[in-house]
Amino acid sequence: MYGYTMNKKAVSDRLRRIEGQVRGIQRMVEEDQYCIDILTQVNSAASALKSVGMGVLDDHVRHCVRESVESGDGDEKLEELLTAVRGSRGSSPCSRRCSHRSRRRSTSPSR
Image (cartoon, rainbow, N blue to C red; front, side, top):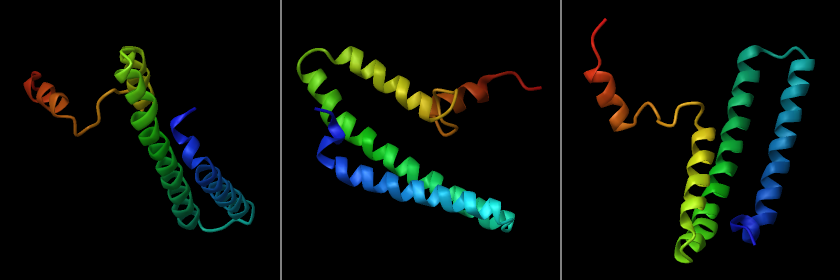
């Protein structure tokens, strides 16, 4: 059983709403709506999708990862989790706010 299984209906319902939102954006493009209005809707849909992803991630950590760690098989799940998080943030494993990344920047030679 996966972590999101308890919330499966809520996740599916939310994804259906986002799908409808994306179809609405497509319609806006077809109808030559104003760029800023389209961008506003794109940002809204992206935010909603990110929220769903964070919910699935939360469930994964609280169920799948925790169970693996408790049973002594956590290394693989933790590595899988880190890979998933890195993928959701782009190519860099660190965010721009990451403390060790900013230290590294400040110690590099000036140009």
